[in-house]
Length: 294
Image (cartoon, rainbow, N blue to C red; front, side, top):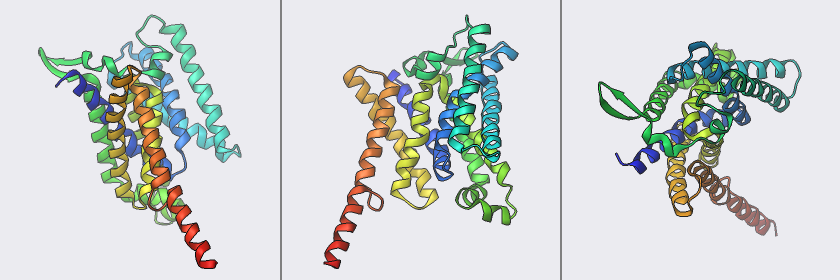
């Protein structure tokens, strides 16, 4: 595959993985938790390195999953204690991210890992960081990691689709039906953490947050059916990756930033022209009602 092909494939995998997980965050009104976890996983990555002395993907995934679940747990704990949800997210997010930055500067300053790189990412280097087994070039490591996480997410969604769906739309009904709501919540947080760290080193936290929120929010405006919402969010993620790459090539700017901008533009167009929830359609409905009443 060509250099451009690997970049587009990486961006598409990030868009699909984050878009699918982001749908459930949108439905649960937990979108900003994605921003928190996308930053606090830095603590998990640094902790995994300090324990294992390795930057291999498996250790980073485990560390990120643990810290991601801890982030969700602390936010839930503060919220249940009377702290507003946005304030709880802000406190946990800044505290854990700051601890990660301090540990990074103290104990891992000479390692190829820094906060700026984690936030901005550099997708242009993806094709050069390859996976080799017995001298055989299997392609970029990021593609394999993102692909594995995507497959894992799809398996979890397939196995627990009914439980996730009911607990997302009506937690009280889910509890009445005997569905382990808390387990499903932390299962989704684990998925979010793994997806975030798999994308973290490749594209940076900014694009991760954009892909976790914007495709799902776009799909939410276009359909009222969860299965269709998941498909639309994945498609929007892929379109954002392709459009962003060509924008970056045209203007010679950041690829990750361009992909995030492309996602925002797609959302803006949908926000105006959505058949049911768009500004234009709602204006037309109000206009018809006014004409009838007149």
